[in-house]
Length: 267
Image (cartoon, rainbow, N blue to C red; front, side, top):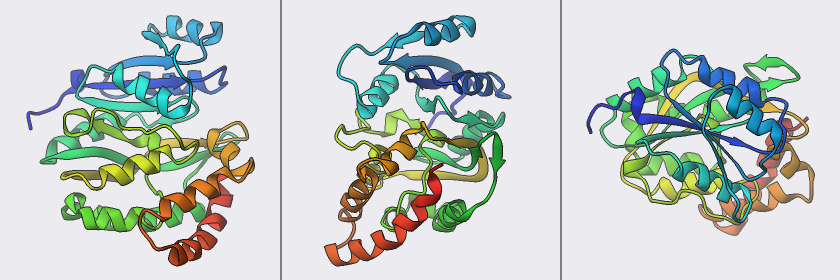
């Protein structure tokens, strides 16, 4: 694969309604040690989003078709014209070295599918570097610290069979090695896990960076907290995902422990 450079990468910010954290997300992208392309997409056009896009000189694209997270993410993905795409979630932030390390790692890989990093949490303005959930996810990803396992379909499917330790905002997609459409409408909370399960079957590498180069914000208005707190949506979708890897009896046992772990992912 030809060496990829800054011009080959785009951050696509997925903006929704009037997030008070959107500006912090934008600024974290603007402070990258290696500057790349930035666009913004939304299905909820408003003056707040338009004002920030204009202030930071970011092209804004409005999705006027069917709403929903999967459709919004696909819309953002397809509006990127580069070989590398990172879907930046409006509430989250990126370490200044994210792009630098991403380019370094992707260029070392032979056939990368996705690149992703470890992450810390942002809770009530605090940078949380460890808690029960983060420790479990890091333990799950331990095999991928060994680079030879990046290309192992068996290893990544075994990891995903126990839950979803891949932080969606930290993922960069290597477009030329992936299907045209990444996200399938239907789920409300496990759209990303479903995508990783599908991509885990592909020939290529899941390139993992153990440094926490993204910061995932946990707050009462987040989609993660909402899906866990309302209508038991998350639990139903988690069970559906476990059934892709396990018989019903084993899936139910895993669910018992998985639900306890997810409780720390809310405010």
